[in-house]
Every structure is written in structure tokens, then in C-alpha cells.
Image (cartoon, rainbow over all chains, first blue to last red; front, side):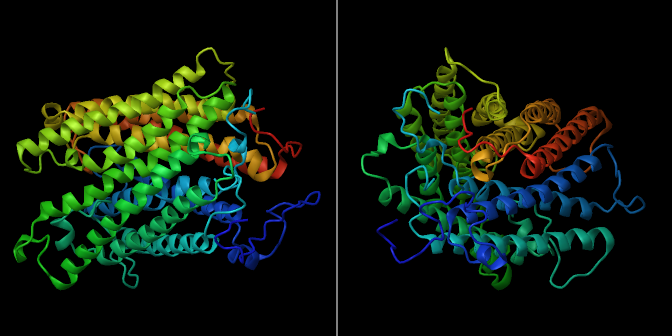
Length: 127
Length: 416
């Protein structure tokens, strides 16, 4: 445990009993909402990031569908509601950039339970 | 990362949780504002405070100081998201400095941690600039203080300087962790040590440093001086060096290795391909003479998506598949994973490669309508987008299926 904040108990079991892991160590919504375990926070990020990507992706598809024809494609025909396009377009860009790629996407990795490379670099076979 | 460092957690676990909640609040607020604008413009549904955002993600002045859409709430949402980013950066730097185990010197750290270290430096130094810029934009709209709006004595180009001083380093915030993931995946599935460890580690820092000095290459046609253009162009070319160092070192790692084409490795190879195309098409955009005709065309859109969407998303998916068994103790369907990776790769190229061609023929970005001559590019591009979208939905189902029915027999599954 860190020397910086020894008082904080992160709910990460030191010695894992069989079948017990960070996912089922504690159950209930509150145990997730107030968790200090970086692995659980990482999972929550991951879910949020995937949801953001889905949202941005759906609007990317809508923008691409709108661009299938030179004129209005599915936005309301008689008046050519370009404002709708502007909003879809801005939503795709802003969600993808500010909610997905810039920050949390790979940050979710950073605090997620990835162990693989705790293996020393000097091992003959990186396992 | 804490586990990579042999630490049980990050240096400041409570800050970590706070950062997540800031992100969550910011994201929900941001989504509300943006979606309300879509609903209003599409169906005329009025929502409280919801005028949406129609400026594009860059909030460029002077349009963002004059439009009727909800620029203030949207920028405030981005501001909250920025704080989340800064806090995480602080946390990572503290963790890497203080929680490395005895004997893990800087040059024995996993490359992913090096990438995160470089990323965190950028986050801490650049994100506050975005925060201040967005606050200034809010002040400009609310109080007309005269910073960006010429009507009150401001300068709209100043906004571009501020914005890109953050947003160019930000692309390295996005891509550096992906570099780190790819370094780990390639070395694992080639069954070899990483080639040129120190060069990869230090090239991350070089990118972080140089990334702060190139923002002007977004503004070659904004009227900045010729000498500024020349200097920004030259420094931009310098960035190609550390990027190429990484690509060549990954290739050298695979050379004579025992390469296994598992799902994460397929994504990593896709990453190298897409990043190389994206990087090389960045060079004509860095050279002033070719940037001027290509500026604000689909060429830029394609370049951006190759580097950001292609590389970052493929890095994300490679990492997700790579650490999936470790995270959940379950295994996804390997064969389906590989097939989906190939589908996504093909769909991606069908989507964005025609955009290079459309851009060189002069199709401007952002436009909702266009002359009929460009239709063929857009149709191909849309079809590719549907293929890629289907592939990505398949990836989601692959994960969910793995979570539900996956083989639980893998406790040390990585690297098979």
C-alpha cells in the first residue's frame, strides 16, 4: 500500500480467497458508487466510454446517411432543415472528442486491472 | 497501471473517484445540452435551457460568440470534463514517481507507463489552457469583455491560438497511451523483447515536448506571419521523427519474432497500418505549399480520422481484447474476434480512404450539401461507415458473449 495515504482502504483484498475477486468482492450499487478500488473505477470508466462512443457513433452514422445524396437526404424535405445537420455534426464531433478520445478512453486502461506487464522486462519470454 | 508498477492502487484513490464523477457529471451535462439541440432542430421539441450546439467541436470564434445555440452550457460541460482530466494527470504522475517498487528504475518501467507519464504531463500543462480559453469564451458571450469578438475590440484569431495550444497537444493525449498499448501487445505476440526500449520511451517524451510547439500548423491560412508559418511547419516535421522511431521499433520487434495473429495483434497490426497512412498524410498538411489547397477539405477529415479514430480506436480495441481475460477472468471467442477486427479494418479504409480523394478534388469539410460530382466518394464512404459500424456492434456482442458464456478457465490468459 502506498506510503502517501495509508489510511485509505481500497477494498482490494490482499490475499484472494478462491473465487473472490474485485468484481464480486463486494456487491450492491453503493459498493460501486463509493469504491476507491482503481480497478472498479476503471471498469466504470470503460462502460461510460463505450456508451459515449456508441452515442457519437450513432450520430456519425446519421451524418454519413445524410451525406449519401448531394441535397437533403432524410432531414425534413420541404425546408431542408440544415440546422439539424449542424447539431448532429457538432454532437458527433464534440462527444467523440471531449467524452471519448481525448481523456477517458485510454485513461480507463490506465487504472484498469491490467496486470500483464508487471512481468519484468528482463524475463526471457514475455508471458 | 498501478498493478504494472506493483502498487495496489493509484497514489490518490479518492482523487481517482472524484475524477470519475467529474467526468460522469460533465458527460451527462454535455450530452443533455447537445441532444436537446438535436431534438429541438429535428422535431421542434423544447427542452429547458437546450439550444444545443451548432459550432462544431472547436467552438471557433467569431461564430461561437454570435450563434444563438447554447455555447455557454456546452463549453461549461467541456470545462468540467477538462478538470477530470487534470486530476487524473496529477494522480498518474504522483503514482509513477512515488509508487514504483524498489528496483524498478525509470528505464525498467513498462512502456505503457512511460506513455502515460508523457500523457499526464501534457494533460497537466495543456488542459488548464483549454479551461481558461473556454472561461474566456463564456465571459465573452455573457459579458462582452472584448477578447475574441472584433465588435468589442477582440481578435477571433486569438481564440484559434488558445484553442490549438491545447488541442494540438491534446491529440497526443489521445494517441500516446495507444502507443503504449501497442508496444505491450506487439512485444507479447511477437514473443520478443521490445526493440529499442529507450528510444520508444524517450520518443514519448519527445512527442509530448514537441507537441506544445506546433499548434500554428492548424492556422497556416489564418493570416499569421510567414515566418511563424515556416517555423511551425519545420517543428511539425520534427514530430514525424519520434513517431517514425516508434513505428520502426515495432517493426523491428516483430522481425524474426514468433508472431501470433491473435485478436489484439491483428488490431495492433491494423494500428500500424492506419497510423502510418495517417502520419504520412500529415506531412503534406505540415508543408505550407500543399496545406493551403488541402486546408479545410476532406483530406484533413480523412487524415484526422486515420490518426485519431483509426489509431486510437484500434489501440483501444487492441488493449480491450488484450486485457479482457485479465479484467473479467473470461475469454472472448477468438475466431470471431479476428474476423471482426478484419471487418472493422476494411470498413474503416472504405470509409476514410475515399475522403482523401474527395479532399484532393476540393470537397470542403463540414458541408451538408455538395455538387453531384462528389457523390460517389460520399456513397462509398457511407457504405464503409455502415460496414465498420456493423463490425463494431459485433465487437460489443463478442465482449458481452464472452462475459456471459466465455471460458472461465483462464487465470493467466494474456499472451497465450
